Length: 213
Image 1 (cartoon, one colour):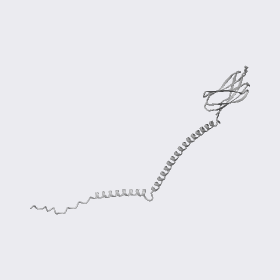
Image 2: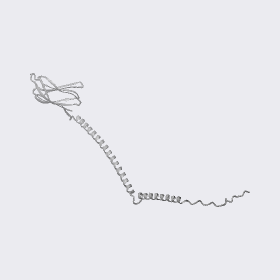
Image 3: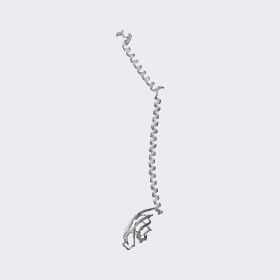
Image 4: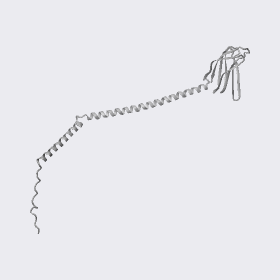
């Protein structure tokens, strides 16, 4: 049998104690960590503590958000109002135009519309001649009046037109001052001023024509 080593049962010696330098370094490191933690704690207390202004800042932020939201809502409302007003103006303009058109058609239906195609037109002509003073294509039936002041007592107004194969040709004596009325239908119409004076005297007239339809 082998012989056991007599050193196996002996207790191990304790580790040597740290040197004084290492102990001082650990103390300094712990002190620095404590100072850093203390400084952080003071900062947290300052920011989030009872005496901090964080609640005021939050309140101010909420108020600012509320004001901005109100401004956005106001801008949306103003935009909607502007759009509505623009649409209203367009509709109002359309309504005005439609009313004017209805009134125009109503006047035509009642033959209360009128126009003055010839106003105080001067006419100078030799004896026993005629002069065309108006020629136009009319859209509505009605009547015309021809008023004239002239130097010849044989002055007359004559209206000529055709419709549906029927020719209309009528003259009415005006003399030195008078008014004549002629019925008309849609189509081309011609109005003349003439005189029957066989002398060489010049006839001078001032003519006005009114169209009622």
